[in-house]
Image 1 (cartoon, rainbow, N blue to C red):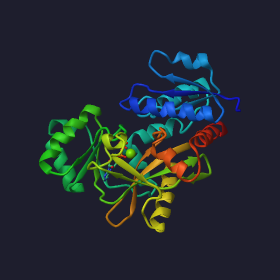
Image 2 (spheres, protein in one colour; image 1 turned 180 degrees about the vertical axis):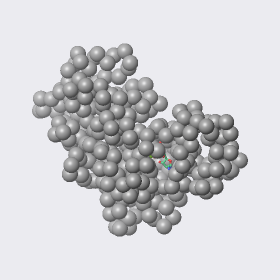
Image 3 (cartoon, rainbow, N blue to C red; image 1 turned 135 degrees about the horizontal axis):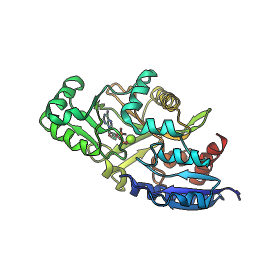
Image 4 (spheres, helix red, strand yellow; image 1 turned 30 degrees about the vertical axis):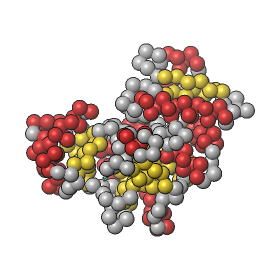
Length: 311
Ligand SMILES: Nc1ncnc2c1ncn2[C@@H]1O[C@H](COP(=O)(O)OP(=O)(O)O)[C@@H](O)[C@H]1O
Ligand SMILES: [Mg+2]
């Protein structure tokens, strides 16, 4: 039996609220099984005071997306001097922003697909801006709203004539759009754990029934598969693990994070993004990789708690 009182913060107000409710419920159950005293809080703008009332020894953040995975709640908890799981303010803020992350990766010499930044000036003539991106990066072209997750706001454009309307639709999520070169190889994801000394869990290969790993294939049972271990050569695996740790370090991540990687046609790995609060339902990628190497869910959450108490 552990004596720490842990508050699992879940829900919130982002587009990934539903996923977060499920992650948080699964984490709370696993923490209880690991022997902690556990409470949960669906964080809303009007109930922040509850955290002060509950006075937990540690907050386990199970929020995804804006207002939770982006450094904002981390800032509140720092200010309240309450320890919390995962990355701090800066790494969280960088990693929620796919363009900033890619700039940091590029500067650190970590391969990431070629990209362009499209700003709000493109709203005047989205078709023209999209065609410029196609000229530079080719077709298919990947367009992503810079600060969303769960594939919300990610579009793969296959025909030039569809590009303008696809780009316009993404401005609904904000003014920064990432245009990225499409990579046709396997999709991998690498769970990383640790503060100063890092370990990776087994590399996962993801296959989806839809045209890519979109929201529907992520959350509809049977529409995607996690293949553990990934069907890749030993050298690609080693390289993916090395890049995942380097990307984690370059962005200043702590505790745990999941690094998404795409292979190109020649099987060379490229980092596409870092998830500082990855999905944590029992069926999610991170817990799945842990299970595959003999770490049950309660042991995984206890490890994450220990990393948080160590910093
Ligand atoms: N450069 C790319 N080439 C091919 N497919 C991509 C590329 N970038 C993203 N995807 C597809 O889009 C999905 C979502 O992109 P990602 O950058 O991981 O954002 P999210 O935060 O929504 O998970 C990926 O899981 C992958 O299936
Ligand atoms: Mg992703």
